[in-house]
Image 1 (cartoon, helix red, strand yellow):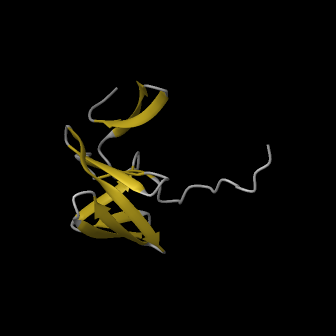
Image 2: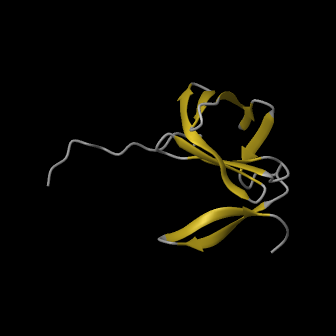
Image 3: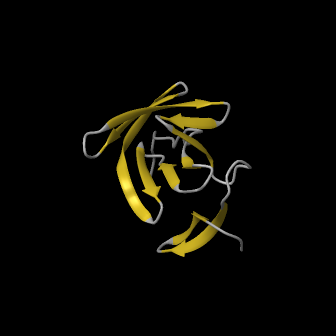
Length: 112
């Protein structure tokens, strides 16, 4: 089978971003969607996003829109400041949890 389609590497902003206290976790997915959890509330906000340079435009599934900018590796999303999961600024540590189909990184408060 021949294909002219070559998979592209995901955008460098794809992945999990978290607030310093770990309460808000925003995952930018490679398909242009995002999933934001707040506390124990999974998928509190979901929608699509587009990246132009260092700027991110969000469109929530309910119609709400927001913006963000990445500066020096930090995501400034409206009034939030988010860091890459596992960044030294966060007070949470990534843990791997088994989910259907494989393993997935999750942010869990507390120690091992």
